[in-house]
Amino acid sequence: MSLGDHLRELRYRVVFSLVWIVLGMVVVAIFYNQVYLFLAQPWLYARDIISATNPEISTQMVLSGVTAPLTLALKICGVGGLVLAAPIWLYQIWAYIVPALLAKEKRWALIFLAVALPLFLAGVTVGYLILPQGISVLMAFTPQSVPITNLIEIDKFLELMLQLMVVFGLGFLMPVVVVGANLVGVLKARQLAKARTYVIFGCFVFGAAATPSTDPFSMLALAVPMALLFVLAEVVCRFNDKRRDRRAAAELVGT
Image (cartoon, rainbow, N blue to C red):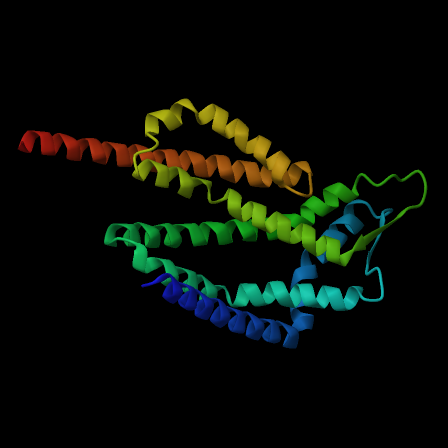
């Protein structure tokens, strides 16, 4: 294909993806109240935890500004449209780049996607589930010597929630990167074993630095699974190295 053909194909796939994203936004707009309730659920759980553990703390969810409700609705519809249309635009990206891949590269790419997507979704789910506990931990630092009402802006809360979920999703992808580097021969299991202590320490440092909520509960919820997934990735790499060594020995004997 010529450069012009590539650009025309890219334009077609971008426009096709945008159409589906807009359709997804329309669907989210139709079920806006239900989507909003789902997104606000971590706050509702956190409020119940705060009421049970620190009943003297006063909290209230607010919107600030005349245009804030419309801006919030547009943000929720936009993100929801991207999520609903994700299978479409991800496939368009795949269909655009796959002709340039060799058969072996296609196979590895499919394996990578098959493993990475569930891990990313698992990380996103963990981030969503631990958010209420993280909020309650942060709210516990509210001074109680004088009456204070915590005004939680819903748009900033949703931004924090999305950031936390994305960070957890990316953190759970670490074993895929490690195993992928081992499969292409960049990393060996013995190298991972030597660096295990430093990597686990790095997981906790990353958990402390990357979690937007900055509470210890969220840090541990991210760091501990990352450390366990790294150990699991190391085991997989060790089996792969042994298999590779046996194959190399068999080829040597055959020659």
